[in-house]
Image 1 (cartoon, one colour):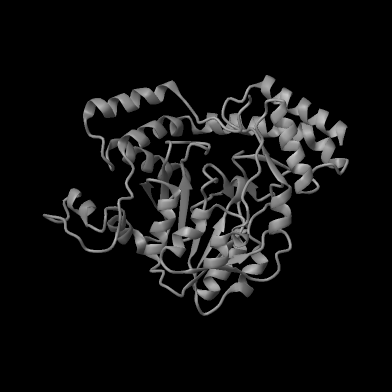
Image 2 (image 1 turned 120 degrees about the horizontal axis):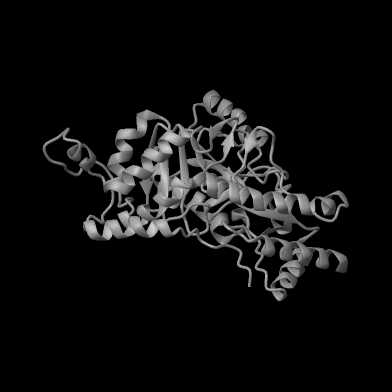
Length: 377
């Protein structure tokens, strides 16, 4: 079976993990936590990066930092992972779901403004498949209404919008280093602080509500409980595993891009024949080949395709079920405007295998199998 995903494994990572074991300093905020943060700050020109236990944790930190309260509203797409919504629902907010663009599957920036009310406390954008949202328009709206922007850039590490790293444009950026992502530490993430007004409190929240970071910098003689917070620090085991991948980030990225281009160039003829639709990457964006997806005519055709590929030992999967159509979405959110594309497009989309070091023979077999399927329909 050709899997849908394989977590990145680099032998070099074992050296770093072994070093952590031998050092006995395995808790968070050690050597490798600092190395990973510094690497991202330097390469993404990010003001401050705090490593977290997950992208979910990073999102939850933003909800605390923005002082989200019961009754507040947070605008976001419905086509996203549940963590995008949960982070704010946990603070008592109501999710206001906005339709997506059919080309990029990102939030439709033209619909955000009409979803704003006096209760709106944040705009959360999701960079789907590592392709940036239309951030200029979104940041103009943010400035016009003085509403902070949170970038859910879980899929966006190493991708850019107009030359700026995804996650560094809004007030906050949230990265994922989950097993399924381009760079992984098993479970893990990072919070990018682009607005320095939030930095001191972010450190406190991440350290269980204490000013421990100040203590270790020698700024105070003891640390105490000063605010709400939780245990958002990843262990050194996790971040040491990630660090080796960051050192090879360009190689990993280029390898994935090569596989993505093979898919795109090989399948383009079927798009021209009107059989499928392929991903769209706007000219102002550089993507990171986080995923490669196709769109079939409808959900029935997609299901038949997935079954056929499974018979041929190729794992292909669909993606999000729109949040607004779920029990949780109905309870904790509302869809504003018309669901013109969210449900329809999500029902058509299927993802092909995509991971680092996907072999040429595997790519060719996947393409040949898709060709067989096309000839049958």
